[in-house]
Length: 89
Image (cartoon, rainbow, N blue to C red):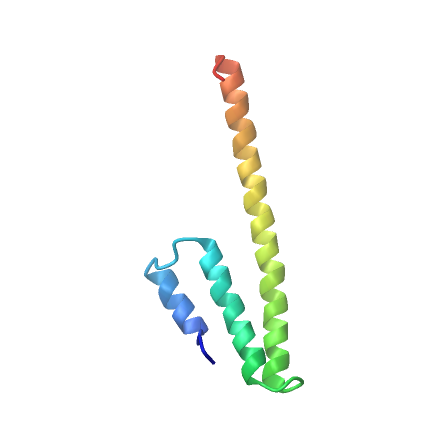
């Protein structure tokens, strides 16, 4: 494994504000899964558990991203409404 990554390291990075973007967090998570598939034999228990965890992560991640986009759109609409009511462009 050329670039090791684990949940303990990710947790430490989160606690110490080492991620400058959510993209780096996502990249580290996917690195864990990539390493799992590289190191473990296809069909092994660990490989299969990696697939399950990746599936759960992807589902939750997509839900969070969709939620964040929705929140930003709501904020934009509120700002646009406020600007139009005050005559600002």
